[in-house]
Length: 111
Picture 1 (cartoon, rainbow, N blue to C red):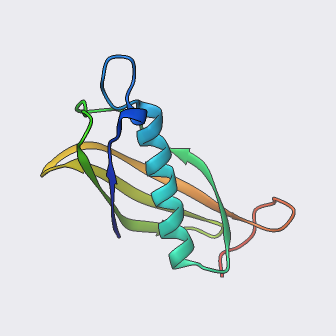
Picture 2: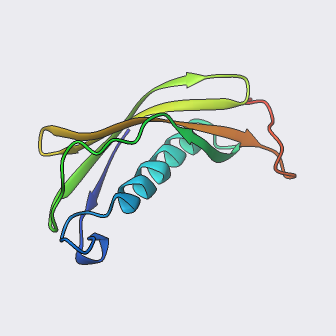
Picture 3: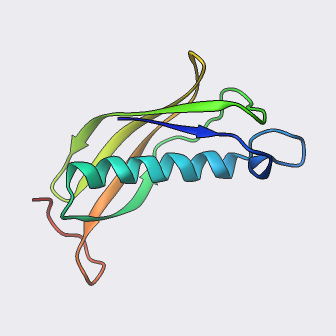
């Protein structure tokens, strides 16, 4: 799956660069979308990201491309590889793990 985000002034930190928290929010959201499209009857919550390391800075007006691939499927969870690109340069990558929960918020098996 692929998605795009435009970096706007409200996404910048006090130095004029993309605030890392916005990037992490987008990564989490896009992984959740991928999981929900793959398993539409499940409710997912994020339980972790394996690594957070920002490889390059990003300025206002940049269009970021997000790719979500290679799900690892467990009994109750999915782990997606999420990569973020500026032009053809990878600026961030991580693995996002989401768990399927029931109405009470407890882990439940994937269908």
